[in-house]
Length: 346
Image 1 (cartoon, one colour):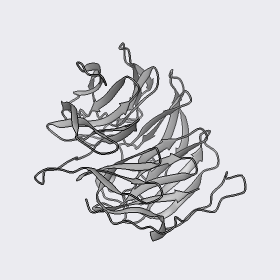
Image 2 (cartoon, rainbow, N blue to C red):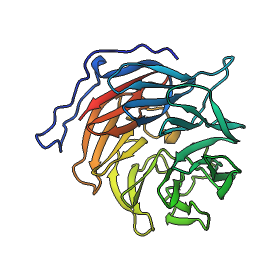
Image 3 (cartoon, rainbow, N blue to C red):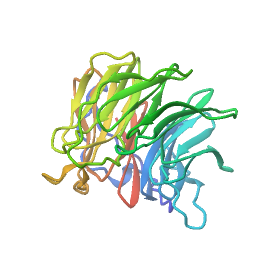
Image 4 (tube, one colour):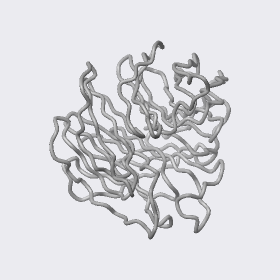
């Protein structure tokens, strides 16, 4: 990874006096950059005043003020580091799943830098979450080969425990004090108790597969906050609008929070808002596999009751990753090969 930092002051979106309604920021400028020329960032995390990223070539971090970019992990002998996956930070440790196939890994490294620890190996591990006691991960399982799993392992060591198996198209996961949550490419959401037990379907599948279609892409994002699960959903027909939906952690009627113009990539939730990224316009009649228009991705937010939708970054992003949000700032990356990490003050 080649870290070239911009040390200029970070530009802010002007807000209303009560900070409730930021207008569009338009195209991000160089003064918003925290780090440049990363090797296609695929996941972001935010902790302790630093932004961490997982990319195809390794793992790094930078201060939220744009200083102190550091490589925490680099690949050896030119080997691919990660094909997909998720990064999370808890305390003084960074954890990630690398998405590699046929054999991937779930690993950790001290946030201050140091030796990498391999926690487990698995086939195509994509989601990862951590609490005070356990680390959790998901493995994918395609639509024609439903062998996906949700697994936990004590941070102190011990055997991995499979909480759910026989799953299809499982991607990122979310965790609270009682359950692990996941969605699939069919628009369904489920949970399983951390202590073990039966899988609970929170929202049924919304879509069916078109004829002769095999899904090998995972759902984009899921989050849990204040007793509700939020997730992104992209219809399998490739033409109906994507959505962000929510449902009570106990199940029930799902609510559509936002109907999106294009395909969502990332999701974040705080006490007041739901934030998301979109790829931008997709070629008409192209289905799910056609690349979006370069530099037309967006970042938006909506109140968690579905009101007051606002576009924060109106254009300029390509395959945006994130957002991750803390206090009055939002962070995301853009770019397919040489990725740039941005901060937007709200």
